[in-house]
Length: 143
Length: 143
DNA sequence: ATCCCAATTTGCAACTATTGAAAATTAGCA
DNA sequence: TGCTAATTTTCAATAGTTGCAAATTGGGAT
Ligand SMILES: [Mn+2]
Ligand SMILES: [Mn+2]
Ligand SMILES: [Zn+2]
Ligand SMILES: [Zn+2]
Image 1 (cartoon, rainbow over the protein chains, first blue to last red):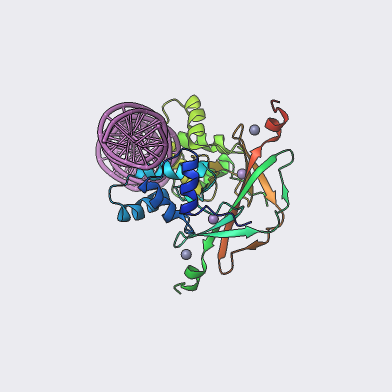
Image 2: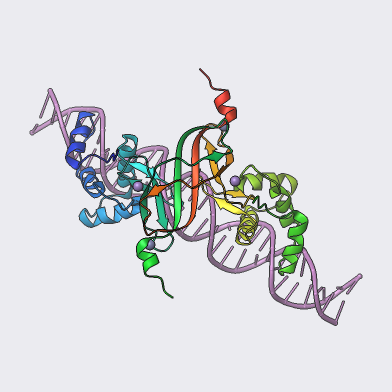
């Protein structure tokens, strides 16, 4: 059910097995993404990566994210915030975006909703984006 | 229920009442958008507008679309196709995007799905994007 | 019918997110 | 230790959209 990206160690093996090289840049990104539930953007990952490896290029971050996505280790999601968010949680789930702090949370729906207007449409995928205020932000309402 | 953008005539009155001018450019866009269920992009509207009014600028199209959106006459939707789609149907509904022809169809859901992971999240809005093959495209599958 | 001026349009530069291309570097094997 | 294909870096280019300033104009006032 919960299908998560493989660990840095497993990815190292998997990459080499496919003829892909395991570079320090890639290893760093494996680590930054592992168990990362913040739904980071390429740029936020680049910022953190730069701190740990000054000189790493944004292009490499994009490249690696795209590679991992093609391999099915990552999911690229679009919540309408302008830039893609990357998600090591590749299980079938949805997202809630806070209008205040922009945090992205996972949402699991049990049963698909009944819909009208999809007669004849062969649904391959459905993604729900909820917007509103997260628990932290709605708790700290200024009133 | 079905809340649609007002007619060109009604918008003309509404605009003037607000101190906004009714220019030929705006009138043209009022007409192009009225009853338009194609979920057009700014650029597709610009193309059609240019045909009827050579010289109109893309900037004006964006400006007018943004104004109408702020006024609640239009809805700007993001189905992940790179550019915003504008929808004169401002009722609460969802969308199905064809992976083959990129057409965007309206979808109405009766009952919201049960979800998990939203404890404490104050949902202000939810939007579902379905992807797959539309009736036309799944009918003409090449096999 | 004309004036006037705030609103609008236009033209174009700037901006953000992402990708393309080519040169420089390097992982991993022989 | 060398070799070479894979990777990284650099930087230009692209798409969609917005910012800004100069030129134009709708529509009320005269
Ligand atoms: Mn997620
Ligand atoms: Mn619609
Ligand atoms: Zn929040
Ligand atoms: Zn189709």
